[in-house]
Length: 233
Image (cartoon, rainbow, N blue to C red):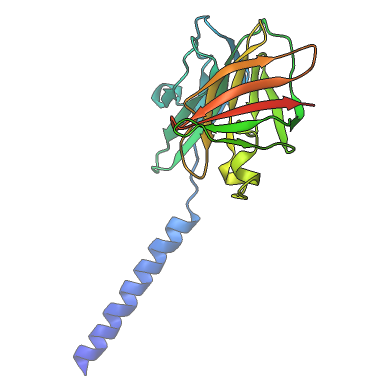
């Protein structure tokens, strides 16, 4: 009986200490590292020019901890594209926080804006390299959005082929970024299709015709197909 009582007393003390400790943890305040980005966000960088990160000021509970943060950057100012700089830190309690600066490497000399909603024109088609088989399609809409001078986001570089024709849905759109050059030619910057996790091989013969307003390109994919797309507002 005494042993049983001792056990009860031990259990009560253990629970009391545990609850006390748990309550202590819940009531204790923590301060995350906060970031104040210098310069603009997003930041536009002329392609080919040298780039210096404007930096950030990091504070924890009012104290400057900038010297202890981690900075990760994939910016390549020699190639047009969308990049990011990630500033991160861990506070005294081991809790992480971060801030992200978006960087667009673009061509400020390009003032033409080709953004808008376009219709995929008749004559747009897919060619299979192996057999030469041609599949015509068209009539759906593609949206082009200006991100920075000469730098544009395209809702589907396939011209809405897989999303609509076989009815796979929006995850099969080849989204991406294109560069409009001063001579109105178009280059591929980057691309991806969510469902398959891959991208285009390249874009050939990309061009914007300012007289007709037409945009066209040949989007080559998995070394097997060419999507010959023509768009017009």
